[in-house]
Length: 120
Image (cartoon, rainbow, N blue to C red; front, side, top):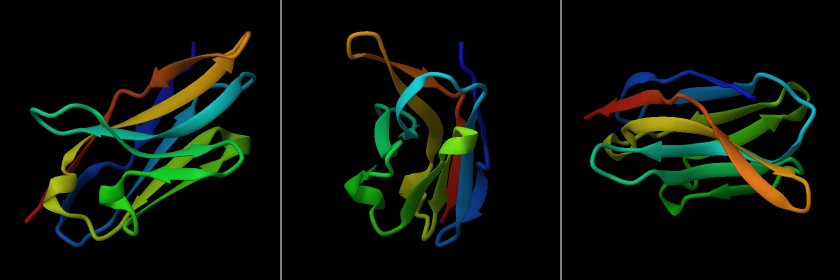
């Protein structure tokens, strides 16, 4: 079993910045992507940004140009730098790790979530 330990959430004013971090508790398996999803009250969980082990990033249109994802593969850690935050970015942010096992099958681990609140 792998635990994802998140940190960095909090309360910030509109236009401010936050940096989220997420570290996997162990290595030794084939990680496909690490990234972040978010869920606002009354809404479905949505992708924010993911990054492959090779460094290819994928962003939601709503965060392009404001958020930057990065990874430290040696530490099995993923970061999300969030700039120019807006009230609509308010949500619980979940770290995700997608991995491969045997014959191309994939599964996910999820963090416990960290609250990001942007005040207007």
